[in-house]
Length: 119
Length: 111
Image (tube, rainbow over all chains, first blue to last red; front, side):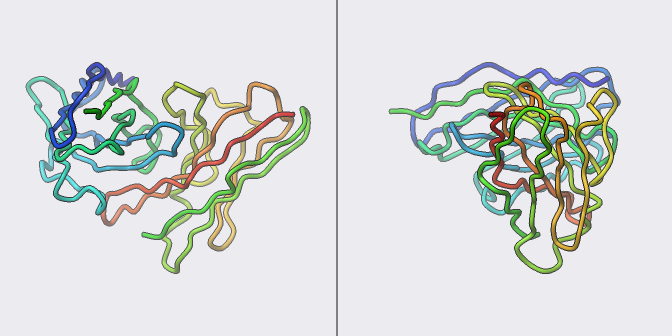
């Protein structure tokens, strides 16, 4: 049973960056695919990117290419998502998620981290 | 990977069945055997309810079922209950590129 525990809420200024963490426990960290999914207020789920620590090259959704960086620290069993050039429409809850039951299904979810972008 | 289209909302009365569709909008949408479905309540993280198109995780009610036909995956909820009210998302996985795409979501209202 994998548990994903995320960092707390953040308030950021437009143009700045935010780094959200996701600490995993209960599984073999290196072999898991950790995705980041965000949800703007009242909107749907949006997949941002994924990293598999044993294959350290992440894969990003085209929309976020150049603005998002996903990294993994195996020593801390923690995955990070950094989003730069923040805009007001980046205000959202950011979730980390990982497969369960099959490699194609996101069965483990963190509790979510609210990022508010406001001047 | 194509976009996935879901109806914005569906509704049904307790005891009825409803179906939520998830349609790929271009050719080559990939294998619908790799479609998963998620249930989300307000303020909560999504919960996996169907994976690989038709399979149910342990602990998920057998009132939830998934199916595929052509370019469309579907989620059926039978014997609607008040607790089923929430948002439902389909999601496709492209294994060759290791990425996921969500549908726009469907709000289910139990009348």
